[in-house]
Amino acid sequence: MRAYLPIVIVVAALAAVPLFVQSNVVLNFLIVALMIALAGQGWNILGGYGGQYSFGHAAFFGTGAYTTAILQVHYEVNAWLGFLAGIAAGAVAGGIIGGLTFRAGLRSSYFALVTLAFAEVLRIFASVAPITGAGVGLLIKLDLHAQAFQFRSRAVFYLIILALVAASLIIAQTLERSRFGAWLVAVRENEDAAMALGVNATAVKVAAMTISGAITAAAGCFYVQYFLFVDAPIGYGAWISIEALLTPIIGGAGTVFGALIGALAVKSIGEGAKFLTGDIPGLDLMTFGAVLVLVIAFAPRGLAGALMDGRDWLARRFVPLRKPAEGTTHG
Amino acid sequence: MLSAPILVSAIVNGLLTGSIYALVALGLTLIYGVLHIINFAHGALLSAALFAAFFAYQKAGIDPYLAVLVLAPAFFGLGYALQRLVIGPAARGEERAMLLVTLGMAVLIENALLYAFRADTRTIDLPYAFKSVDLVFTFVAVPRLISFAVVFVVALVLWLIMTRTDTGKAIRAVAKERLGAELSGINVTHIYAMTFGLGTACVAIAACLLIPTYYVNPSAGNAFVLIAFTIVVLGGMGSVPGALIGGLVIGVVESLGGFFFGESLGQAGIFLIFIAVLLVRPRGLFGASA
Image (cartoon, rainbow over all chains, first blue to last red; front, side):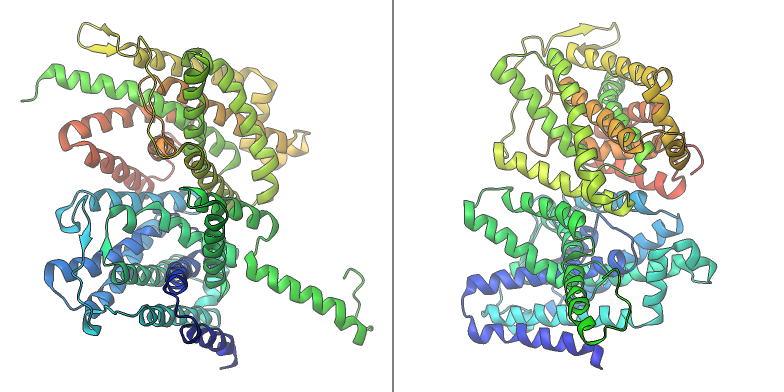
């Protein structure tokens, strides 16, 4: 259980925030950041651990969001059931897209392109199909009751998204320690070598994309319940594909906390930029782009990696004082 | 209901639009052929070039067809510098990192344009923009005819560079066998940057050809590049004739698709072709074996 201790500590600390902070602005900021962290954690499972860089995770975010919204608006299904159905739909979408692309042997640039294309096709269909509300989008009826998954208090929403993020952290931690996780990392490091050792690379990648799709879809479902609205540019737009990829890359791809660290960092930077120069459109995304390039250049393992490097550096600095016998000639 | 002249003019229009697509795709495929990455910043660079062409006309009164003589070298230099100073050093030759750096640059450039010029859509008024010539079977706007011709001149020049100059030979050598080229004394870093520069110059030329009849806003380039991705995949990544033919084919498909199913579904049709080609024949219709 020790491996899960950091998750318990971090989640407990975050859960305590509403006890001290009542400001809706702060809570709203944290809710959105955690939602992006959740979407990013979905990307992280496939991209971080599996090395398959999807440029179209909007496909899953939107599928989750639209499934939840369509079931409630057109079929009057209970919101909680709709939420679960949205996650399931995301898993199915992940399985289908993963099955098609990985079976065709697409890697690297090709994989990035085809995921982008899937998201675009879905966006175009969602912007014309009647069931998705076409260009207008879908509006969920205001009904502030717990059974409708709507709450007057933002703190409740905050705790719900925190619980979802906690679940995604546990999934990543479990994955890291599992045989499946080892296969996935082996595929990332050297697919041919992994296959030579008997790993069914295609099956592993499809499974990872299924899990990945489900997690990112959960973020989409949450979006709909929180904002009670979705349209094609929100659900299937490029913004979420980029943010889902940006957060784990900046935080540290292939680490348990990477997406969470990245989301908090990215959102803080975005708010900071707005605070400094006023809310001019394009500014926050502009800084995201710059941060992405800088992180790849100077901290290729993300902030989590940089922290670990810092810890190692400290260890190298101070441990030899006690154990000079161990060779540290190139420390 | 469906008359031959309308159909013919839809096809001709498709071919003319397709030639611009082909030019944008040419830049992409060139970069892919040598660096083995899709340049996700291509669209943002096209938007930037459209703005450059727009302001050259608006502020200095330079005709877009003359501006190309300045913008093409300028964007060649920009592309060279980006690869040499940003992408190369940041990614350290790692493919996935290169993809991400180009994506980061795309986000950065597009939003810098949004920040500087806002989301307003701008157009220029050229006196001859709506002149058209009678091709017997249909009427064609003059600027579109010019761009069709220019694209083929550019393709020819590019072909001459690739086959007749030492740089071209070095580019082909690096594309075929990077390590071997490096061992025989070719400066691969320089060749990478040259290739990126040439690809970016294609974008600048495309922008000058587009601006007389098209509009500019910070995300104007994206529409073209998403289509160029399709063309590059259809024609085979890295294949120059593939990009040209693929561009024309997609232009016609889009024009006819829009004609029969309406504009936005015509676009969806392109992406569906794209996905189908990727899944069934990922090396494209003209691509060498992967």
